[in-house]
Image 1 (cartoon, one colour):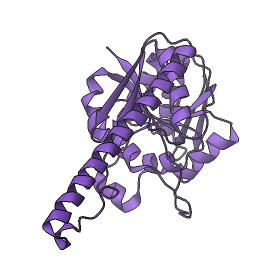
Image 2 (spheres, rainbow, N blue to C red):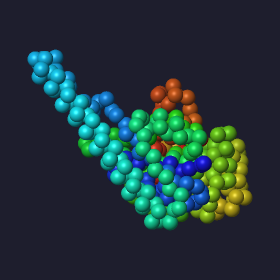
Image 3 (cartoon, rainbow, N blue to C red):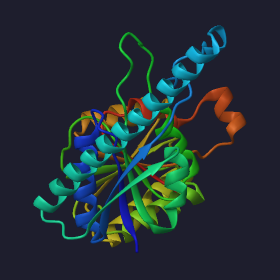
Image 4 (cartoon, rainbow, N blue to C red):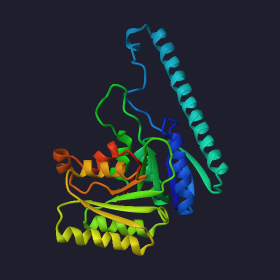
Length: 284
């Protein structure tokens, strides 16, 4: 069974993830499954073990208490997760979705997402806000790992839910970019929305031809299309276009360059995920 997986954790973006999940499942006509992962972070766990400094009887007593405390924490975390899933499921059913599932797993989000990938058509995750006092741009590490690892589209939400009426495709003319356009054109997810296609490149006959192909492909699929060929820094140009044109959703490909090149000059995908003013749908 093909599903939309909405990954929720009770954090600030959970409401938006739920709403985008409902929106996507309705448009795709598939089951919506809310996924909650109990992820243990070694850096936040367990109180330090000073039991070696204690007498034998006191050591055994302390270890027993620590074990009981860990068990209680685990039970509370599971119960909290179940409550999050139940609330999300009820919300989706009240919105009119008939096919809604929930799933709770232990482990890491990336491993769990990989496990369910054969069932997935789309994943939805929330971008966590920056840590207070941290001025640099921020993308939750789990979100970036999921986007890098999975071979399915991933929608990263930002801010409150707003039903999309328009979207922008960041197009580069590559074979991967053309495949992305064809995938979007053939999917019901964005049908009926106004389409903008923006290519950041030199104004050459080849780039004009590539952009024309993309606009024609989307137009033949029934979309109202605006195409733009612009020059400048890709990250800034694309981000400005989103804001200036009131675009609701960014559509882009995932990591078109080698990992070594990304370490040296960065990645447009990563930068836009961190700084986009609107949700980003990352295609594979």
